Length: 550
Image 1 (tube, one colour):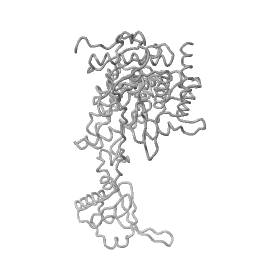
Image 2 (tube, one colour; image 1 turned 30 degrees about the vertical axis):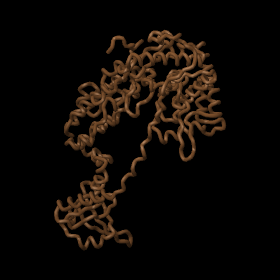
Image 3 (cartoon, helix red, strand yellow; image 1 turned 180 degrees about the vertical axis):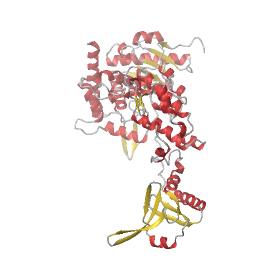
């Protein structure tokens, strides 16, 4: 790389590298560089012990009963460490799930499954109290529960009785065939365990077919019972449907003939079984119109000079900044200049110290370094787990106000949300009683008019959900996305009021329009709804500035 390139600045942003544990599973070493919020999101059973492709494994020769037992053990583990106590619960959870995964997945027969209980006792995960009872050390409480203890002790008989067992590991296209074949039972008619009998109830006499199997007796009452009894030949094979209790075939000479008949019936029935309707048309990606050039009308904050990483750090107090490796020096400089001017415009509109825009120096900024390519690539996005706004090269131009709104939403979560709320953004959390009225009214006004009916903004956003894929942090009609789009409009209107233009800051606020069934839908606030939201944003910004200056 050319040594004259403008380099990353401030503290390293980093981030959880999910691709590194894909396939091998999340391990303890992966936790070391994670933030508390990243651990909350990524420390999950599915990341530590990725669900195996049981269909492929069984097709390759894995024992079905053993595979089903492994799946039962995996399912019994809690999905995350929330049921555990202690500051190191993430580490203990990962260590235990990883250990169980490794011991369970290496077993190849049901005779070996008893080894798991022995291993748990030997390694101290369970403490034997009596020959039939074990205690769970406090260290492992929450992850070793009754469901897990029950799952590891299941035997083949227990597994085969599970309703999901017949279709376990079966390819979707074979499901109908397997279900039908599983219902068809073959028995040898010898007149004793399988025999015609008569029951008398008062003056009523009824004949039935009795099939005694193990400790159970099954009763069949076919319509043609009289005909069957007269025409059946002893010491022949029969086929019955255990679901409908019908007799499917009889007087078959050999067990092989019966098995071949079952195969033909199941295959034929599966062919004519009702198929699921075709999936609905996939949703499209909403593409922002890309700017041919970025126009700006306003104060020359840089006095004709280029912005530098040091200038962004000193002016705004960013925690850090980074560039994509494929970004050349000219494009890096262009992004620095545009970002500096746009952020100064934002500070001017909000009438606040530029350093307040980074929320006590916790916000970072990235230029084309954290997104993924492809048709679905986002033009810009905000990462709550690392508190970083990423702008995708110059395609991110015009999205800064929208993404900064997400950062603002995130920064308010600790103050405006009820304790214990699991969401990262304040707009998606339960609102704290201590939150200012301006916040409560603003969130309400996004979706409800003053008369309690839905806003046109919400109705249109819901329509966008029906035809477009998710946007940013959720559905188009999610509160957090509606909040960000409304804030973008607020900033765009404020610029217009002052006769200013700042395309890098906001350029797409009014582009979310769709025609459906002769009706035009705007997935952004317009008219009276926009005026009302702008007034509420004024009130919220005033309250926030009061909190900063308090």
